[in-house]
Amino acid sequence: MEYRNVGKWGLMLSEVGLGSWLTFGNQIRLSDLRKIIHRAYDAGITFFDTAEVYTGGVAESMLGEVLKDFNRMDYVASTKIFWWGARERNQQGLTKKHLVEGMRASLKRLQLDYVDIMYCHRPDMDTPLEETLSGIEYILDSGMALYWGTSEWPADRIEEAAELAREMGMMPPIVEQPHYNMLVREKVEKDFLPLYEDPGIGLTTFSPLASGVLTGKYNNGIPPGSRLERFPWLRDMLEKEGAFKPETIKKLEALKELAESLDATMAQLAIAWILKNEHVTSVILGVSKLEQLEENLGALELKNKLTPQIMSDIEKILSE
Image (cartoon, rainbow, N blue to C red; front, top):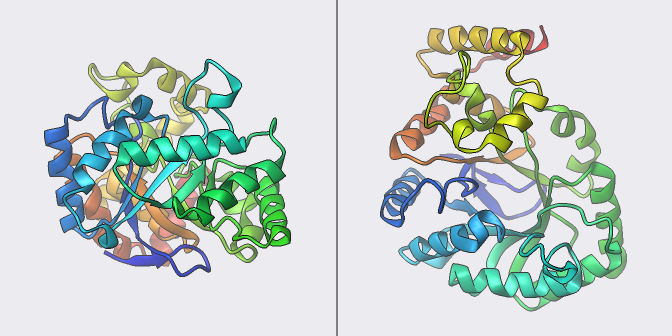
């Protein structure tokens, strides 16, 4: 396991982390989750990510229960604040009120005194950025979080937040958590280029397998019991992104052949490809079974086999 700095900053994360979106509380029981997290930890994964909105807080509670098994100084925990209740404005967004109250509630569910990273889960265009940063400053000064970052923010909003943070004399965002994989690349590879130098952000990317599309299991339709059958809204979203178009399936089949030539699976190839990006600090995995975790961990070894020529071959496939 490699450990990478978060951008230009001193904090280091395991090159792959374990996330909890659509799995904790939906697909995994606590007893099975404990086995997965312990195996991940034994493999060197020390970065664990969640959010207040995941399964209505259940994901945080489950993660917190298992993290009690470890020494607090030996792992990095992060959560994300934006959504909690939809009943009224004060229970969502990035107002100072919701940031502070949401953070306190998350820590209670996690059974932690602090998280290492607090992410602003989406940009809140209805709240002045000055107010959002005031809430973040309070959270940092109170010791509820050590660092802060953003998730799915546009580049110009991150730049604006970093500049304002400097004017306020507080720490700027150190990390962004974007959607990034072989099929979703624009933001990470183009829009964010200026941000890697100043403010020097790192990336903790999610959905490396495009919700299973990059495993090849949906090439011939939606199998019964699969994630896309369980979550029709996710299937519809992927369909709008073109994940099931004939030209995409053609790319997936070519990637499968390439993976097999390397004695690897498509999932391992997709994760290893992301790990070759120097701007990526950690790839967040989402697994519901121990076998999936074991397969994904194979990407760490495969990464070293991805020569410049193979990376070029992959780029040719993706560009066709």
